[in-house]
Length: 369
Image (cartoon, rainbow, N blue to C red):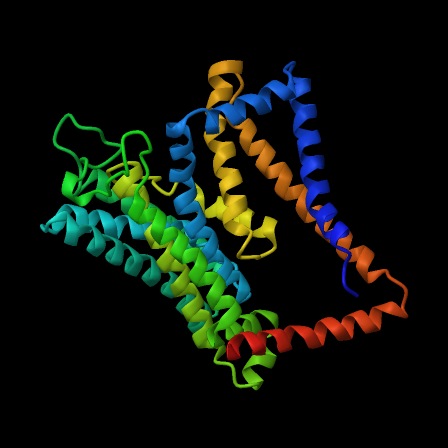
């Protein structure tokens, strides 16, 4: 049975209103006005062009990570190793920035390609551990996250350490010709990175809706055993999904070291991989919604800096709002699913048959187009 459009809107609005109400109650409990808190969040994110640029600069790697996770989630894979893949892309980009001597017109594209290959390689390792050795991607991803993080610390404090008296928390700033240039001083955002991100969003949406590979990913994610019996190369689909996700994660890592920080730092990923997981769970693996919700999260994080300055509130309140929103949406979706399953028995079989038949049909049409 097709849902009424008004119901679909309510399913989105109600969890947002509930999460805002919970956060407002917490703010009132500490003696502050929730209206003033939300006003300061808005001011912190959009008070001028530099603030908006800060939101966009965080959105770029977050959106890339979200679109990569959309691919692996579509294939039924929990890619918890996203943080490590971002870090690996940052390491590869840092190596290129420190080592390769070329004009910026050639060096920057090479750095981005190398970073993408580094992230794809780390995703491939997670896939091999799963498909060849039976290591679940959650455990493989967490282990590889720790491994690359420790290796980054080793490089920063060892072979890549700054000269004596320098900062032990980062490498030396990379040469100017190795960095991504901002559009302008008024709006300091990399145009190249912004275009790459928009292109990545469009390509992922097209892949999942209009290609055979996207259909194979969906079939693998729905039921890998049945997909294998129907001739879908499930192992190849799994590995390619991890590599595609790692490729986008590597680009996100490159942006962090070549623009955000201009150097390599131990925690250069900044939790973006885990935040992207929350965004993808929140949107229900819908590729069109992921970059939009990612922008909202980026705005909340960027605006949270005003809370400490203006209201003497810890900026982690923004994390409370995000976490509450995700939790309420997940609980609301679970409740909605239970209510759907509890419909009268006469309506349930018809709806079940309709949904079972329509999904493969639409996927086949998308692949054919």
